[in-house]
Length: 281
Ligand SMILES: CN(C)C(=N)NCCC[C@H](N)C(=O)O
Image (cartoon, rainbow, N blue to C red):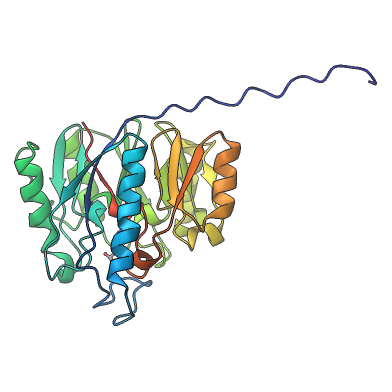
C-alpha cells in the first residue's frame, strides 16, 4: 500500500570468531616431482620462492586474525609436506596419526607424530587403514565428517570413531578432481558447512542436505579453484581469491571474507586448508 512502512531488513547475523591453533609447514622443499592427484603434472615449473611468499602470506593472515600458528620443520625430499593438514587428525587434545595412501608421502607421518608427541599430544599412533588426516576428516560441532573414495579408507572411519569417541559420518567422494574431503567441503561454524554437491555420491549428498539444510552449496567453478579448501573461524573465512561467487555468497551470510593467493601450491593440488592442520583441544 502506498505510504506503508516497509518492514526493516532482518538484522544481519552477528558472526563470532573462535581463536584457533594451527600447525603449518613451510614449502621450502615444495616441488611437483610425481603425480598422485589430478592436479599434478610432474616436472611442471614451480617457483619455490613464490610458493614460500604465498605460504607466508597465509600464515601471517591467520596471525593477523588472532590465531596461533606453530611451525613444523620441513624435511628435504618430502615435497608435499607443506600440505600439513594430511599429517594427523587432532581433536579433543588427542592426535590420530596418518597412514598415507602413497609411499611418496609416507615419511611425513612420523615427522608429524614426533612433533605432536613433543607438543604433549601423547602417543600418536597411525590408523591401521589409510587415513590422510584433515584432508578427509573435519569436525562440525560434535560430528566428524569423513571422506572416502580416493585416499582415506572406510575402515579408518570406524577406527577414528572408536579412538575419538565422536560420531563419524562417512561420505563418498566420486570425482577424482576432488580427491580429499577438504577439496569439496569445509565447516563454516559448529552447525553448518559450505560444500560442492558434484563431488559426492547421491546418497552422501542426501546425508549432507539432511544434516545441514542451510549448508552453502558452491558452484563447480568455485570448486575448481579449490574454493572449498577454505578455513573459517566462525566469522572470517580465509579462501582462495579466485573463488569469487563463493566469496559473495559468504559475504551475504555475514561472514568476513579474507582472500588469499596460493597459486603455486595449487600445482600440487592444495589450497589454504591443505596447508593448515588444526590442533583442537
Ligand atoms: C586439499 N587437499 C587435497 C589436501 N588436504 N592436501 C593436499 C595434498 C596434495 C598432495 N600433492 C597429495 O596429492 O597428496
